[in-house]
Structure formats: C-alpha cells, structure tokens
Length: 193
Image 1 (cartoon, rainbow, N blue to C red):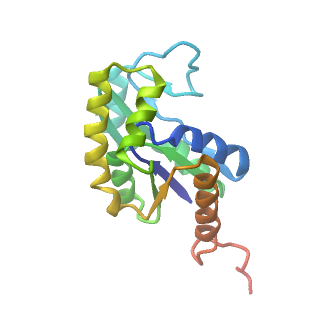
Image 2 (image 1 turned 30 degrees about the horizontal axis):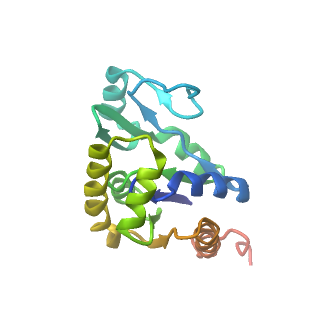
Image 3 (image 1 turned 180 degrees about the vertical axis):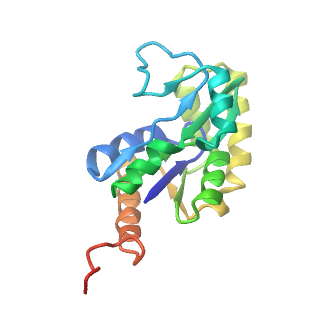
C-alpha cells in the first residue's frame, strides 16, 4: 500500500511519520529527490536524494517521478523506482508530501491512501509555526495563507486526521493502516481458500 501524508506546514507530519516508522515495521519511508542544497547534518540518500536541476529535469522528462513540485525556487519529487520496488516486495510505503503532490499520486496510483493531517485550529497552527522560532513573521504569514489553500483541498483526500494530541493522531493513522490492509485487494492471507 502507498500511504500519503499531507497537510499544512506545522501540522506535525514529520513527527507523526517518525512515530509511525518506529511502530510499524511493515512501513518504509520514501526518500524524495530535491534540487536544493543539503542542510547541516542531512545525508544524501537518507534525508533526500540531492540532485542537480538538470538531473531533476531529466527525471521529469523520463517519467522517473511519481510526483513533483517546484517549491521556493527548488524542485522536490518522489522517485518512482524505489517506490515501485518496495511495493513489489510487499512493503507499505509512506510518503510525506504536499497536497499538490498527493493529488498527483492519486491520479497515477488510484488505490493510494491519502491522509490529511490537520491541527485543531488555525490559531493552534499559527502558534506551532511561531513556536518553531525558525521563520520570520512574513514567512509564517505566507505559510498560513498556503495552509488555507491546502485545507480547501482536503475533501479530495481519503481521510482527515486531527493532530491535537500526537499519540491520538498516530493511533488513528495506525487504525486506518490496519483497516486498509484488510481490504480484499490488499489482504493476501486469505488467498488460497
């Protein structure tokens, strides 16, 4: 199964992903490709595949990406080969990507499961973004405007999960994973009856 986690910046997607990967051994995180330079302590092939703009454009032209987007003067995308390989081995794949990318995935892989992670309110989201102390006020305002656009697209997702309490959000997502794994098209244990 391909599981896509999207939602506004500050919704807690990264933390949820880390917890899911610790608790779900059948789940593997897909590593995205990007043209942006690595930040301190980021490792190529672990955090991202860091590629040149020319290489990324070649990947787009050769349909090597399941989805891609231009964000803040850089490209980001999901390499198709690694995802296809993991799925063919029976491994569930987790993608943490923006809404635009999630909708691209759904077009190419209709049985992908799309989850939208949402904080309880706009005010809480704003407080979380300010609490990071990593963005200027104008950047926070821009992220909040973008969040409003993303929220308008959540009805195109399969599930919406409120991240008020982290442990509860992870529990809900694990329940969704369990239910989705029981769909006849995904459950393999009954074959042979």
